[in-house]
Length: 423
Image 1 (cartoon, rainbow, N blue to C red):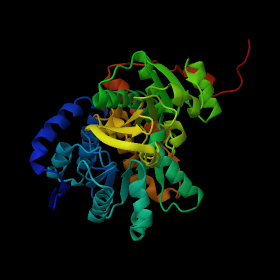
Image 2: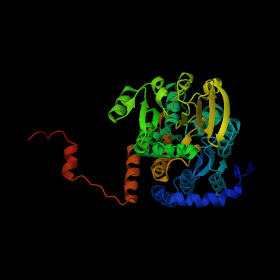
Image 3: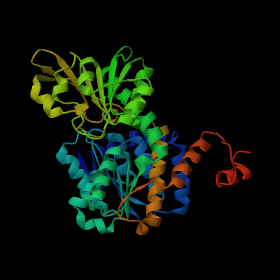
Image 4: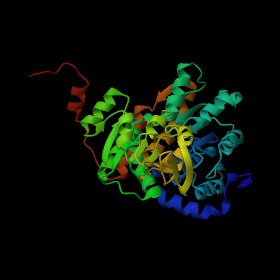
């Protein structure tokens, strides 16, 4: 690792390669391109100190360059030990964004890098993906919390954590749940997670999905996207869900729905996307077919009970970079992908730039909103303001060359009145 005033990265000489890849992706993120030009002119974030704990990818780089054009001073740490693209980290460090991230961090190195990112900027705004940065400021760097104007949270797992902290009256600054914006959930979570999760599994294994039984745990927006794409490849999809409404929706969408104890017996590929812990456990492993593949699309590596898998295995070996084989006492073999970490970012490139364009446009506009309004907000979790969500959708349509209908004055009046009825 290389440590300098620029941060901690694997190899700063990778910067040129990272820059080329960032420029390629930026072409496919036109909404952020429009915001970047606006921010460059207006400088709405001049002098604002931002610490980001995000996946260090080309798409993230486009967001951070947009914020930097707006005048922000930024530090960056990775949101996952295995998701960092080292060439991107080097490029960002060279561009003046203090970057503390390299692929393959141990747990200790992960938190060391996060701590250094926080210490190096003394942030006024936090950008988080999973909640570790916000939690760290509350617990280890609590003296800094009063200076934090607010934070943005990118993913379901993090939003759950922050809402729990709010419920306990322990949240010390406002947090905007960027994850819950419609232009994030419906596109990033569904189409992004759907495509990139399948990409990660294919990259790691090169297996054929057609004819396989794919078990998807969780039928939120991410689970919907994974199920949709798996079915599109010819898989027979089974959904495991605890929420009755979501389970009913999965049935109506044409999937089989059952508990994991039953799905474990028939699945060829298992994909978790719940945000919860121990979704697949010892009692499930012991029922699985020889050759079953286990993958996780949730943020943390807790959805598959890896400790339990280790305990029942009589032999382990690494098959390839992203595949580990666990042999059970009767000779059956289970294959865990990417150590149970988020497979779309560890074994692939993560979400496509076209959907991250909207997610990160929400991030950029919410940062601007916090700087302008943070002092008026309560210490709780907020939804993305409707006007920001709709602006992102309008800008995306604009960049796609699509024009939509507009209400006439008569229609607008009708929708806002109660007088009209049957005539």
